[in-house]
Structures are given as C-alpha cells and as structure tokens.
Image (tube, rainbow, N blue to C red; front, side, top):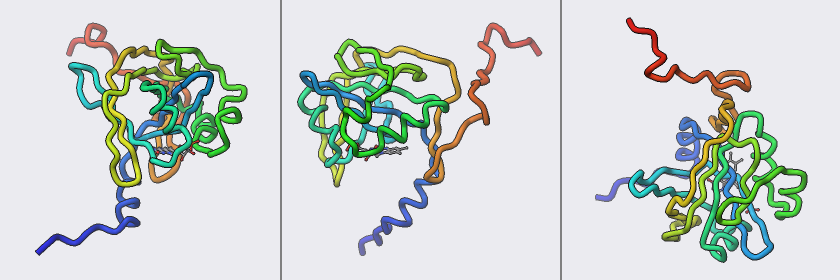
Amino acid sequence: MSAPKADADGFRRLMARWPTGVSVVTARSGEQDGGMTVNALLSISLDPPTLLVSLARDADTVPLLDASGHFAVSFLAARQRELSEGFARRVGAAEKFRGVPIRRGVTGAALLEGALGWIECRTLQTIPLADHRLYVGEVLAAREGTDAAPLLFYHRSYARADGGDRLILPPAPADRPSP
Ligand SMILES: Cc1cc2nc3c(=O)[nH]c(=O)nc-3n(C[C@H](O)[C@H](O)[C@H](O)COP(=O)(O)O)c2cc1C
C-alpha cells in the first residue's frame, strides 16, 4: 500500500516553521540584468564549493541564468527588506534595479551593495523538477560584506534576529575569556 500524499496547504504551513535567510539571485546576459528574491538556497558541498538555488520555472529571471551560464547571490541584511520586496515583484528588471546601488562581479552579474555577502557561480547543472528549476553552481567567488543583522523569513513574513540592525557575533575563540 502506498503512503498518502501530503496536501500542498499542510506542507506550506509546515515549511513556514522553517526560518531562512533571504537573498537576491541575479544574472546578466549581454546588456540585460535580471534578479529575483530567493530563499530556497543551499550549500551543497565545501570541496569543491557548490551552491544550489531553486527557481520557479516561469520566473522572468530564469532565462537570463540560462543564457549567461552564471548567477550571483547577494545575502540581504535586515535593513534591506525593501530590496527583498522589490525583487519579489514581477515588474521587470528596469523597475527592480532603479536606484539600487550595485557593483559588478567577476561574472558581470549585479551584486547588491550593503549585502552581508556575495557568491558568484558558474552553472554546473540545471535540474527541472516539479514547477521549479534547480541551479547547481560552482562557486567562483565568495566575498563577505557588512556584519549587520541578517534579513530572515519566518511564518511567511520577515523577521529579525536581534530586533535591531546590529549583529552580535560570539567572540572569536582567541578572545573568549578563560573559565
Ligand atoms: C522572502 C521570499 C523568498 C522567495 N524565495 C523564492 C525562491 O526561493 N524561489 C523562487 O522561485 N521564488 C521565490 N520568491 C518569489 C520570487 O521572488 C518572485 O516570484 C519574483 O517575482 C520572481 O521575479 P521574476 O519573475 O521577475 O524573475 C520569494 C519571494 C520572497 C518574498
């Protein structure tokens, strides 16, 4: 006897109990930039550094990833919530990038200024699955940005780790007071 399938609503409710960070995935092909808000992101392996993102098949940004063979990820800080909202709207790239400070990475993709960090990938493999496409990327560059508090997504809304903009990091091992 086969096990019963979970219904989509129950699954969505349950996944709302799984907190994540929030990123913007960008790609550039020719003169065309694209970007979308993404929290389905996973570090697959450290050696070699490999990253996976899961994008809705019908997202406008998807053809740009396919055309360029590269993508970049900007990890958003709590104070960048507006960027998360802006890049989650289907308004076209010109509108999304208007007034947004960016820098160009090694792949040419836009890196959002003020982010916690940036990763740039060469696409190793794309896997069509259900209504999504998985992009597995070889990490070409990984750079740390600001040490601000991360933007979090939890219970289908934004959350903050510490109620403020500052991130309280644990002391580095050498600085820890001895017991
Ligand atoms: C916090 C948050 C996380 C999201 N994560 C994803 C994701 O992991 N994958 C995805 O396909 N869409 C995700 N979305 C939705 C896309 O950002 C949204 O559909 C966007 O409009 C797609 O842009 P485009 O069609 O212009 O490319 C997320 C939205 C929000 C607000």
